[in-house]
Length: 405
Image 1 (tube, one colour):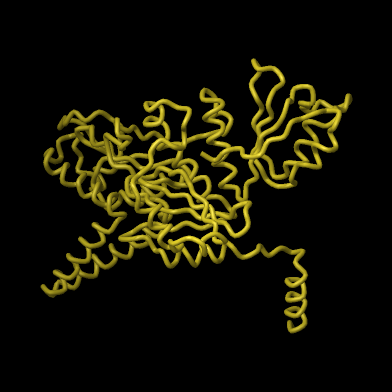
Image 2 (tube, rainbow, N blue to C red; image 1 turned 90 degrees about the vertical axis):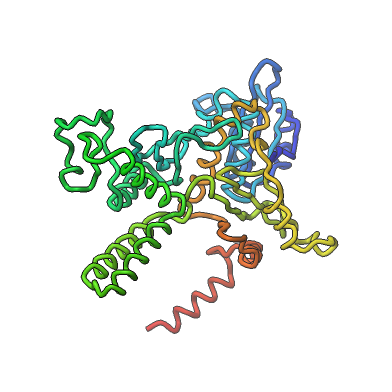
């Protein structure tokens, strides 16, 4: 757990000394109450010194701003090196201290995913924010693909992807009634129309299986199928059919390019997120396994020279070791962890991934982990940030402007 590792006692009579001890850095801070029965006050801020000066400084009688000068006994805080570390720390502390209302504090809302509900006799694909899990924390009752940046983006991708399949898009209860008029998709031959017995149950199951394979392989199964059909058509000199299949492949590639790299079958969402930290020459490493964040570790490159393991071996031990479940929510019961943390972890990852600008880097595991690319990314993150106030940068810009027409 990312602890609040710094502590200071607050004395209103020595307010200047107290503020002088605080860093003007981004941080997560817990303001502790003088009364044991009162709940503490948890904040996250871009400038800890300035924020506490306002909260704990002398109150302004003419202002209605919150002032905790008479409330505070002391503070515990953690300086954070990135927005991701700050959100992650705030999430962990909030779940421990406020287990009943931490979702409201974080405005937490699980991201949108696509689901094929396999418990239904005639499954369909739809957008949802809820992913039920079993006692082992594995998603159940369907195939899930995502997460997406928003409901709108998930619906747009689903609308285009489902054009390649003849599964139903309606929400009616299927009764297989031949007198039922059907919907516009059945009239356009874009649905097998189980509603009026336009297909057998077996035929519909085959089409659903194609859709599930599409989700589980991120589109590779459908692409391979089209390519094989195109090759057969070419061998049979059926060039018209081969050209039609080629157009289908181009359309499929366009659809898949519209899907973000983060979106994939949830169980296959294995990645590593790299972040700057408040410590010098240190990288925060956050593993994602099956859509769940694992407890991070901090790789201190200044200490690697004295260790028998290389940086790559340290990454291998972390990323290829056994899964560590339930570490992000230490105050919750096992039932709460299984029910909640998958959606909440996806929210943490998606919130960072779709942020703009996005700080840090992410690498996905395909057949293996790209260790060389990960180590090169660490080198980039360890370089000092370039700012507009950097004299060297200003000189470089002036030189460039001199050579401009």
